[in-house]
Length: 438
Image (cartoon, rainbow, N blue to C red; front, side):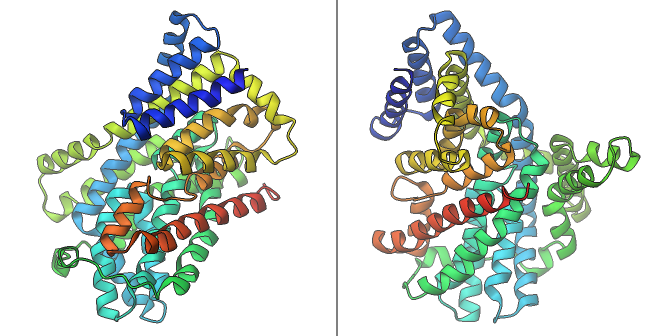
């Protein structure tokens, strides 16, 4: 009976969001309340559980998401993303142009949220394809595959950050393991896959092509751009690696542990970007702060969505459903990592949003993390991989891709959906292999 209530709750959630077009946050709260009542919780306890879920979920991730948005704003407005792209394309040459764009997409994707990164890289993709006289999908897919991977696998993106907090996973290890899994996933779903799809005729509308990049003189230097965009990864990565090889009392380990704390690392990165990409290039501090304020405004919907999923997760815990599901799933012969991936895949197919699929799946399989002894960092990546699977007509990215490349729905399914599915399957395989060594 408890499992049936959860299934009905998820179905109602999908119905509210997809059919009745309810706001995602409102839908999560309604479903959380109804599930709690159906499981026998008094109304007062149900409301307290929802409040606890909202607060606990947002307490950790709000600073990381806000600082991530601010860093992305500085990288995009300053032209640092454009500088990184042009420099790497020049360095790799036409023969290896796909690898240059793949690497660029990965660097940009770490520091920028998906939608922002997409709008920034599209003019760059069009420019490179026209200059090198190469098929558009041959040029574009490696970069877009890299953006999708960072969106699904790596903090400070919303879903990986929220799931990391739910599982009490180590964010630094999640990032290091995520990069290890991301590399083959991007290569398979980018340069290799694009060679089989490059014959799809993409003819973007002229108004998209006419978007002009900044003049070279207006761009920051390559190394400044590169260092600033990757600074969070550098700080958190060094701290995590030091933890593997240095004793806790080592002074270097302590310093790296401090600056590698995710919140501190993101704050330092924002402050460095304010100087390197702002003040050092003649911008006024008041103008920079105004831009940073605007960058956070767009996060409201995402944060409410994640908070709503956190409320549902807490109701499942407080009502005892999570324990019941955990005992039920723990008897399965399937790998917990595969189960997490499968549930996220089903939700992604149904609801479209990778963020909703990821955080909802995390709430469902949370008991598996403690009951089975699976590495929480690997479970974050398994769910992240599943949350990218089978993107189709209910996925906002599907329509962005279709419209910018001016493709038919059939060709978008042949390219975008196959790319996203390839990323999801490659990610699962990578996680399974990594689980043998960590």
